[in-house]
Length: 400
Image (cartoon, rainbow, N blue to C red; front, top):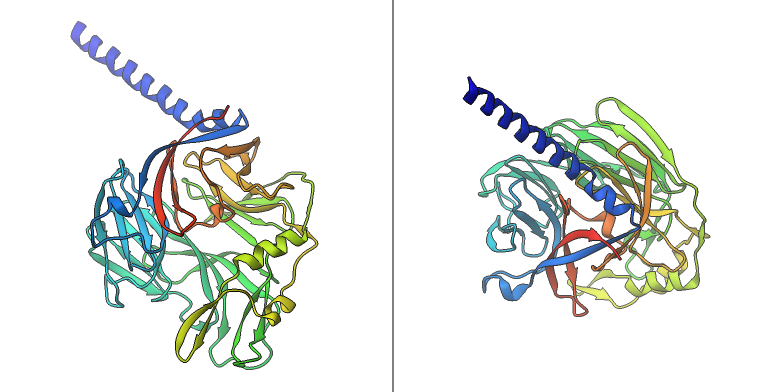
C-alpha cells in the first residue's frame, strides 16, 4: 500500500509539474512582449556552403516547421522542398521539376499537418499533398474555372482542412470591360481538396488593368500602399481577418463564423514622395523581347503615370500569429521602421507594442509563405546585399 501511495504521489507531482511547465510555456512569449522589446538571438545560419554540392538556395520562399522540429523550405526555382533537422543539418530534398504526381512546379506556400506536407505550386497552378518521404498523396488545381485569378495564400488547420485566400478571376469566355475592383475571398477547403466554402469575401480596388502601348498586351498595374485584406491563422485554427483601411480586426471560427472584433486607435502616417520612390526603386516587370524574358530595370513611363497612391499609409502591413496564439500586427511607422508590431492576446486584448531586435525584419514579414514560428523559435529566409539566401534560426529573448 505504501508503495502504491508513493507511486500515486509521484505521479501527481509529475503531472502537476508538467501542468505548471505547460502554463509557463503558454505565457512565456506574452511576458517577453510586455517588456516592449524582443531580441532574436541567432542560433543557426545555413548558407549554400553548408549544402551538398548539387543543392543550392536558388529562390527559397516558404518555411514550415514539423512537430518533430524538422524544417521544410520550398524553393520556387529549384522545384523542390529542402528538409533540415532542428539543429540545421541538411537531410534531403523532396520532389523534382515536373507536372506529374509528386513533381513540383514552383513550390511556394507550405503547410504541415501531421505527417502530410501541403504545398502550393505557382507554375503548376495546383495544391499538392505529399508525405515527408516524397510519396505523392493527392493534388487539385486552384482557380480551374476562371482566368486572371490567383491564390494569394494557403494555411492549414490541424484537422487537415485548408484556408485558401484567393482573388477570383474572370469567367472563361468573358468579354467586355475589365473590372475596376478585385473580388477577394477567404475559403475553407476540405481535406480531400473538394468544394470550398466561403468564410469571408470583399471587393477592393488595389490595381487596374492596363494595355502596354508597345505590345497591346493587358497586364495588372498594382497600387502600392492601398488598403488590402490581411489574413492570419492561429495554432488552434481561428482566423484573424483585417481590412487595413482601418484598424479593426475580426476573429473567425472556420465553422461558426465571426466570434470577436477588436480595434485600436492609431495616428495616420502620411504617404510621402520617398515612399513612392522606394516602391519604384524595387519595381520589377518581366517582358519578352524576341521570345527572351527580360526584367526591366525601371518601370515604363505609362506604369508610373497609371500607378495610384493613397494619401495616408494603412494602419498596418499585415497579421501573423506566434506559436502561442498571440497576434502580431505589423505596423507602418513615421520612421518607416519595419520591426514594430502591436501584439494582442488570443482574446484580442492588447499586450504591448514591441520592437524586434537582433534580426532583419522586412516589410513582407507578415506575408510569407509558411509558418516560421516554432515555440520560442523563429526560422526565416534572409538575403544578403548580393541576393544570396540563407536560412536562419533565432530564439526569442527579452530585449534590453
